Amino acid sequence: VGVFAGTAFSQPQKLTHHDALTALKQVAYAGRTLNFTGVFVLQKGDHFETCRITHHGGGGQELEKIERLDGAPLEITRINNDILVYIPGDKLVKSKVGVAERSFPSLTQDQLNTVGQNYDVYVGNVDRIAGRFATHISLLPKDKLRYRHELWIDQKTGLQIKAQMYTDRNELVEQIMFTEISVGSHVTEDMTRSTYEDEALAWRMDRGARSQLRNAAAKRLWAVSKPPSGFKQVMELQKKVGGTG
Image (cartoon, rainbow, N blue to C red; front, side, top):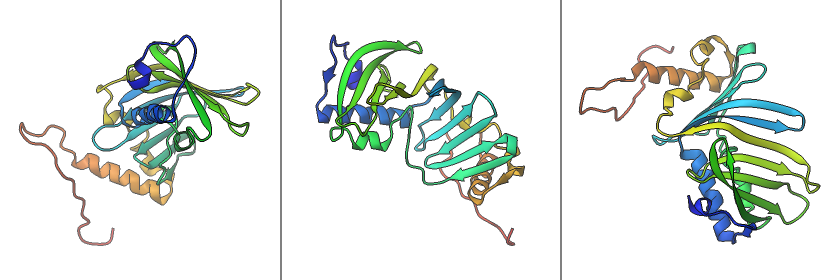
């Protein structure tokens, strides 16, 4: 995919501002639009956390579920820019709306906005990570106010599969990487639903969470699982009939 599909370089090659921005936009686009599921490990200092992510980018909307696999259970689901956080130990659901920012395996808007102005971008060797060949990309800050970023981009899909941040003293701040990942149409919308979506209707939650869960339940109630041959669902309409409830 673009610069990531090329052969490895014996020495890192600096990209022009245009090529760097184009390459990183490809990474961000892949992270938003591809269907994939996998397990990644997040390291911050001495803290490690393992999570499973399931992402569906088709059908005109972005759906995502992140499950924490270590310690107390926690799930985070996303529908476009709306997020629900399920905390089963407290029987609690929290909502966040209008969250346009994206992170691993996509890229943050800050990383895209500051390319060229604050970073030099280099493309380097090809490594093998989680069974996939990935091109190594370095974002080197032009001052000491920012972290150095090391990214590994899947050659086949353009998806980021490993990322590291370092201080100017070469100290590792954070590392996040897939240990396994699968990309393709076998990842369905239903796989992004929270395990707790149904039982959470009886949990404590804020108004935004209650609205999102009720809408999801209503869509499942009216969904046509197997339409007759030659027919397809083209529109949904919800209408309150009578009363105030």
